[in-house]
Length: 247
Image (cartoon, rainbow, N blue to C red; front, top):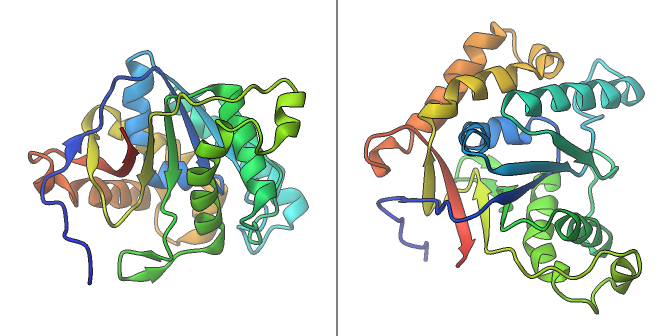
């Protein structure tokens, strides 16, 4: 039996100062939630990005040795548009990320380094709604992020992190999942939407390989459709929706 759909989305609480976003690839956050990130950094909150891969397998016409550094540069430029100064890459292989202790350890280490109250990630379920199969990279990183929040607070899981000077951290209050088919909360997209468009456009190499459309038309149409899709559940305002776990 499917779970009942939450009719109205609640505003995502803003009682936090530091957030850490953990995703698999360059552009995942730009497709998912950068309008919210722009609004948060405008308000003086600190947001850092951690990416499991450099997206080196993402463009068919580019060798991974060329593609990885290119997409890393585009990701850093994209993050800067929405006020994010810290972008880290964990070095896992694009397309074959494995869920397991190694991935959990890397993400737990990032949580201990950054000590966020809010953690963001992308849809960890097998499908995007009922329409499309999710990629194994997204599933692995999303699930590992949820698990790593608990790992980060337990000194006996990955004790080598403590030996490296990364003390346990139990201060994560919430995990917010973008792209979920079961959203519970939302952030008004209007203040950050134009910068979200510019941020995604920084991934020009990927966009030009993905679509024959004019990149700006494609990006603006995609983000407008995405944010207006939940407006009737958020007081009529276009919004970035999240499924939220935590208190």
